[in-house]
Image (cartoon, rainbow, N blue to C red):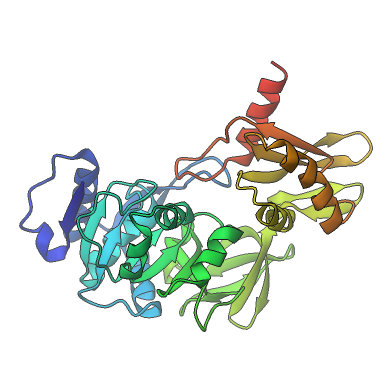
Length: 355
């Protein structure tokens, strides 16, 4: 099902019967009536989900930044396929209202193009899983060129998807941001002439790092308040490279290991061996090392892959970055926005293993 709307459309539309579209309709009504504050909920990917209050001025500033950065003006035809109950989907509605877009709203699904009678858009924001599903489906892969500019966020882009994106003839960007910054404050081009490993800060964003090397940002989108992150970064000019999260750093035998960096190295091994299983690095207590590195893999591997994987990892990483154990979990726990909840997954695995 789809719902086509926009600032001028909404004023002549009745409240949809579909509960999801009604949720979007109600927010748009509050916006057009001039509400000054809105309660949003964090996704829970880096901690317990929590409600936060943001101002209209913050949301307006975020919409203006995106419009300027991606040259998306009045009349932009946008596909809204992210959950409007969270900041990424909600900001699509705000952009539509503030910038004069034509919005096609769909209920969130793994492949948002399934069921659409036609695909002809200028802009879409989605999570990497959605783009991957589109590219893997023979019925939708040829429609990617009609999506316009694509903005990815909410989760990392895996190596296989990154390679596929390089071959697309539409620009694809990865965003950096969080609920507290009301969507993204930096963008990274994933293909084309401007493709880079670095994120570029959007205009109007002030930034720096604390004593840990973790990024902080401020600007109109944060209501002038400094938002301190736990993201370790390396800043160069108005760009930065993301290293990993400070709370994903363990001390193993006196050596600090950034789990996110180890994930990236092991991801290359998975890619080269043709292993598509989801995975992540984690840790468990160890009498000798203090914290020992372990690898959690979703589901099981084929026998030959199970033999190849440990040997291939050993050949590509340092001794300390070599997982001491590889565990297989039947399923990964997810947050409300479909991100892997690493801590919950490992705790569930331990509970099931101890029976």
